[in-house]
Image (tube, rainbow, N blue to C red; front, side):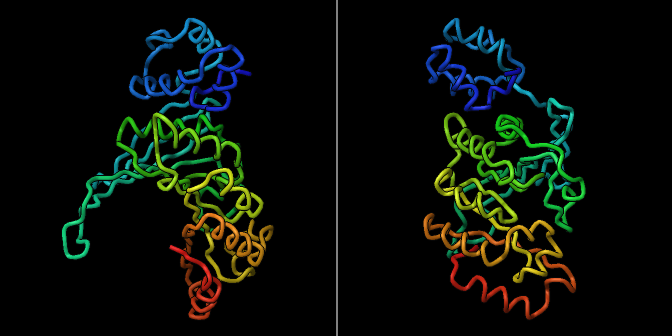
Length: 293
């Protein structure tokens, strides 16, 4: 194994176990690295001596770096251009909102400022969706679980991240094992994001949806539907040919039955393609048995 990311949970655990080092040190290492971006391994206090030599030989505190940070004029969004160790770039976007704005039951809303991070899972994407800039790039490579988590690490140094959405570059369910490993790290110490605050958006990779609830219970699922019938869906999303709408809806029924959670439906209105009255009726019929958001 080459030099990997310290946030690649399974690799780090495997190396610690192989060396006979207690894995309870791993979250302490993560916490220190998050708070001290430019630290060296020897800076971390109170680790067993074997841990220092293992970390030096096998892992980096970060395999990616923030190439640029661009803030919107209103300060609501911050775009991070993240450079990976292979030289490729992905984007992660922090979106801020204030839950106190507006009223709830006639009273001021509780809470305060919140930040959601939109994360990338691949460089490019092979789904080829017509409305998506990443789709026109084609697929370059999958991110490792460490590279996915590092986007959260970089962002958390700029803002307190409360929610994560996998809606950046790539189709998350086409990088399934790295996605699962990354979410498990994010929902553990020290990040401690509730799975209810993590959303994965997919075009509808049926075989992966069938495994998702078992591997990541409590996670939010969002499905890019964009059309209520298969032929229109294929015009907009060529990859939908591999995932017939009827079979996709069957797998979503099973997912909802097992998870007891709402499924979020994404639908981009394209003029003259999927925005006619008949499409609205077809969509209502398609979703009538679902609990959707």
